[in-house]
Image: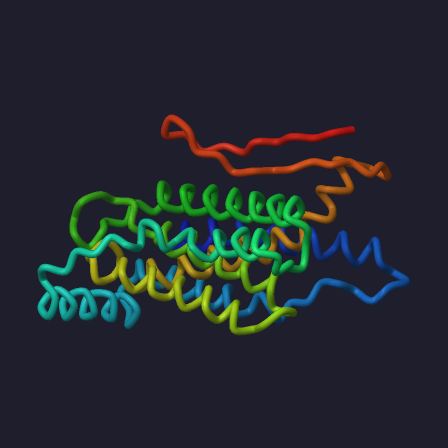
Length: 248
């Protein structure tokens, strides 16, 4: 089981190294845009979360934390996390519409977020299905990693990247909401600590990869022409998809 988790985490990280090689090849005469440092923290989160399936201190902390939370707050049931997970991403649109412009245009920001959300959702669903970890409340076997936490941290990193040049406090606020989302998942007895930590890693990594991938994908789609296009995540009839629109 541990080998399977590690292999799946490497699958998610593989595009990072592919993009890095492509960036180096395309910018032999320019300063490389790729840096490994921003990926260290999400990689640590993923590694920590993967250890939760073994017989070690991470697993022991999962169990003791769950037991203490349930002993102290057995009737806790607050489901604000179902909405909070999207709040940082919604803030990007709210700020844009209120006149506070971010790093990218709203069209480009939407494309970046669509890629981030798609990477995050696909990777977490694949790992959930492959690992089959039981939730602490025993309701289902899709506990690892926390999808709510991954969604919220992907959105928080998106907010941070778009508005870090305006004010770092905007990014801090987004991460505070993401952290609260993960804590609610623990208090609601829906996830183990390692699920939440891994979810944060998946979310942050997905958004960082999307910022690297988007310029290449935009160039691939538009070539040298100036086109207006948008990528928007949609959810309809219990199915997730991406709406693409372009004007040539």
